[in-house]
Length: 228
Image 1 (cartoon, rainbow, N blue to C red):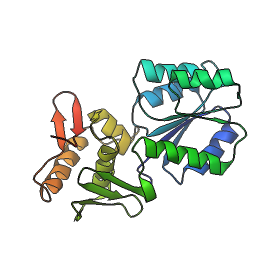
Image 2 (image 1 turned 90 degrees about the vertical axis):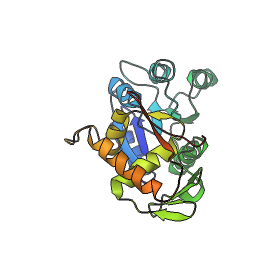
Image 3 (image 1 turned 135 degrees about the vertical axis):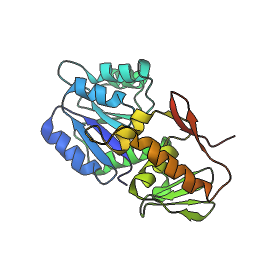
Image 4 (image 1 turned 120 degrees about the vertical axis):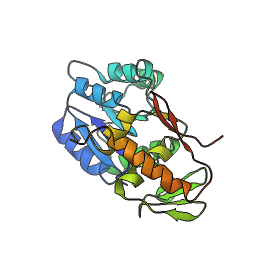
């Protein structure tokens, strides 16, 4: 399920490394030990879920969450992870837009269960690693996609690109977000590669259906529309 991207913001390096090992079976995990860096990474809008510690140096997890929700308008699921287990802290976290709350210490199985539940609720992960959006169906286990039951022949990046759209249907995705998500921040490839892959993906979709769900929004980005 490496199509999913998970952000961990945790200053305890040992715990962060353990979290990465736990969650690596679900998706590609990025770890930040610094609150300000973690905040900036989250604001890129390319992650499917964030695990956010509250007790961070210099900036608190509460402040990061508030900026994500009010300034950046991020809707990615956020799981608060903290040693603070008072009711007031939990209520405050939910008021700021947290989706779930897990107190330390915790069991690996509970963490995985909560993360998967959040991903399913957000439409990022289907039952048995299946995604169904409009007339598209994807199997995340064997990396296949079908349209009306007919398999779509895709290469690796084309598949990753389409899954990103399926997981964010009816949401605008910028060219920069696609590049950072699929090729990575440090890639030496130029941004124009996005247009090349978008063109190839659209052509392959058009061979199997008359309806082209991916629309270009001039000077804004792209959107995968499930309705006309």
